[in-house]
Length: 131
Image (cartoon, rainbow, N blue to C red; front, side):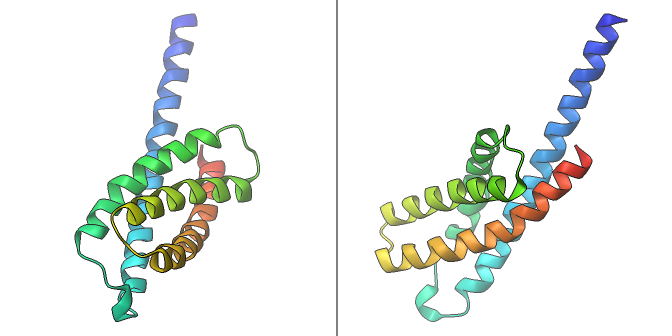
């Protein structure tokens, strides 16, 4: 019976982790789509196609780091704030190092943060309800 309980608990953890990673990936995809539309609004905001392809794995991996940082937090607003901050800051540092201007990087720091925060709050509500 003891081994069966351990297996059941391990199975539940794997299912929760899988669900969380799938939801995070969906959030990053929605973020990338929204960001694509924002970049299309102004010619000066144009970026090459690889900008969006790289955003998905990079944002997802940093999102996992953010989720690890907020595991013990209870407040979904704080969780969303921290995870959005981790993803946004690391993305913008990368873009700055790639040669984007500081004005561009700072503008999109706020835009990316706003998009992510708006998407992450519902994600944490969903995760609280289903995990």
